[in-house]
Length: 453
Ligand SMILES: Cc1ncc(COP(=O)(O)O)c(C=O)c1O
Image (cartoon, rainbow, N blue to C red):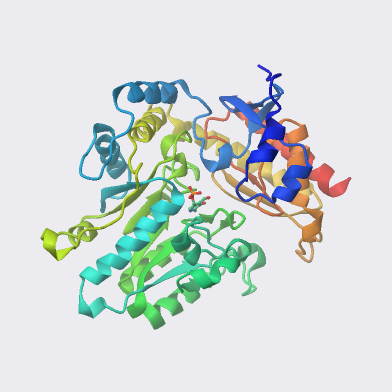
């Protein structure tokens, strides 16, 4: 259905300030206003149809407006729209907590809700810090965190303090708390000159050295398991995460896994931690938790950490943290429906064949002269474009190659969003093989036209 009455694009440019967007460019160029969505497709106000190649910012899982999700939200709003978890409970929050505990490593027995990925991470940081305060004098020096180079954990100041994407985070430096940085594998440009197949995870020496020297000051290590998303889909060699876990145990620091991007099937398993059998002290979940419909996040933790906050009220051991919409019933109902669809549609089982196809097809991208590296973990793909392949030399920033590829794809009916010059593919898990073929064909052609023509 078209929208003849109103010029929404003009009104947008008059009223909105978009996230992560240079608004000068935005105002000067034609923009899409999305009106509705169905399955894998988004439709704009002109009635044009686009395949959602990045799951609406890595969130959508089963396609848009899946009937089971629509039903769950509709019936929930009739029953209970919102009620706080501060001093009260509600059924959907309890049911969801029970299911999340069942799906994750047995050590994780407690669920604390918040609203998005950034807040899920903030909760883990505050809980870890607070836990060590409760442990008393022996651990009183533990006030710092370790994160990895190029990491991204969100945009609130705690999360930014741990972030490693200089472009996003440098300016806020005076506002941030100091953290230790360890090297995250970046195999395409390995600074140690090693090959991933033979390096024996040489780069894990960095995190080892940080922990050996500073563990007495360190509360926790936070890591994106298996693949750093916003860094440009940087995949870690297998064994890296297990090594980080072992070091955390050895040096008595918490391990926080940020599965905000990788959770809910993106890497081919329900959670990326399953690939290496890792069991963290905190697990941060968001994005796909509600199937991509409503904002909801969860931070899972252990009974041991939970118990440390117990005491008489007057001892003030309480975790004083919570948001107005924490554990919103509509979002919890959507999350329960999301998990139900996983079971009913055997989403993970059906995904495996698509991952195999994707892996095979991605090999062809090497034929494009400006594709430097193709990285993927399950359904998370990064195609890095470079000006000179032999030298691995990036394009000049002003060329905005990633953006040009996105515009080419859009002309051909596909929505993508790049990370600089890394083209990201992260479709909903429910994509059909045929749609996946279209996504790959169009991406290939768009890269070719933007870089070679
Ligand atoms: C690994 C990771 N952590 C945290 C976040 C922040 O999540 P949100 O944007 O929901 O605050 C993101 C967002 O992309 C992410 O990829």
